[in-house]
Length: 470
Image (cartoon, rainbow, N blue to C red):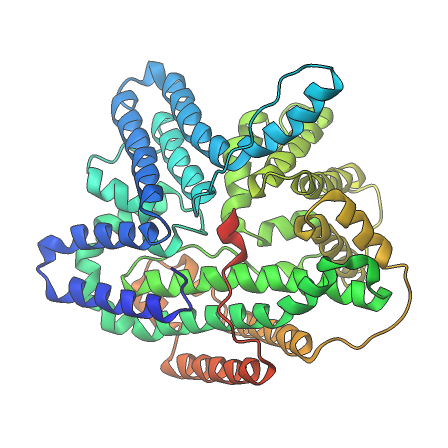
């Protein structure tokens, strides 16, 4: 169920009415049932898999939590169960399709069958969120949740379930514990929720405007002019940012309506002046997850330069594979890992670049690195890069121009109102006051304007979110 559809509008309306009209004692059950209904919309079997994963981590935390001497066993069991699910659904065909040619080359008569596996929506996100909870409990960072319904709601909270942000139990569980009391302030939160949702819809709409330019280029990069190749690469970088940040804003708005604050997942990533700075701003919940649950446990930067570079490289390769079962994602991760290592190697030895030049070089790398992320295979990746040398000029499509301007304008809006007051304050009154009713009105008007432009251009079809496939 997509946020920007009429089905979601009716779902959310019915959800809110049930929460407001039924007794407070039924609130937790309504929220939990609604979250499972939202997720099960894509397939009831997926909801059963989600439930099985959640019950596993809840049981492990309750059993091993008091037995601190066995904490490593609990983490290993959780990792095996969670990542076995993830590995089967996401990587089995990738592994089999790469092993079969190897068997043939070795003269072995063994051929592994390719499976018709449907990837459950959001499995990469909720697996990381649930596993991190187990690690936090068994390492003593937080106590185990004693309420099974509240833990299930922590894993399945519908606004952020299928595409993040990946929330930590220490942030989300305390909010879930107080949800019954927070529902009384829903009317006061409506302007802020509408503002966030409208901003997200606007980002998504602008992403959909630039998408045809990206799709046309990656369908046949060999036939593109040099200018067409540059516009195609730029279009995908803008598309994935607008699309993913748009989802997160809509998730924030929907969640805030119920009094649950979701973290900021993006902080103007295309304003970064280094690759390291980019990862502080892009998909923050994922980058911090890999830092805390992979890079630091590997040793981080505590064991010398060589070990630090190895840890960085491995972390980024795993990050690439998390995004998809394809060699192209490994290449994307390797490119970012290589540049992160290069920045550390150079460190303070080289004179610092002027900020405008540092920004330009960083953006050139980031947008060029998006090519293997979007391309279906390594051959297409190479063809896309070589297309930049084809020469020739063509004007960009009007939809691309309008979408690019729109994404830049929304980012300027973000910078202007300083969204940090929403993300960081523990005072709900201050968080609510960060959004006046006029802001919601302005963004809703902008949404209507962009929808009208898309309608005129014939680009107002409902498109899924890119990160649903991860």
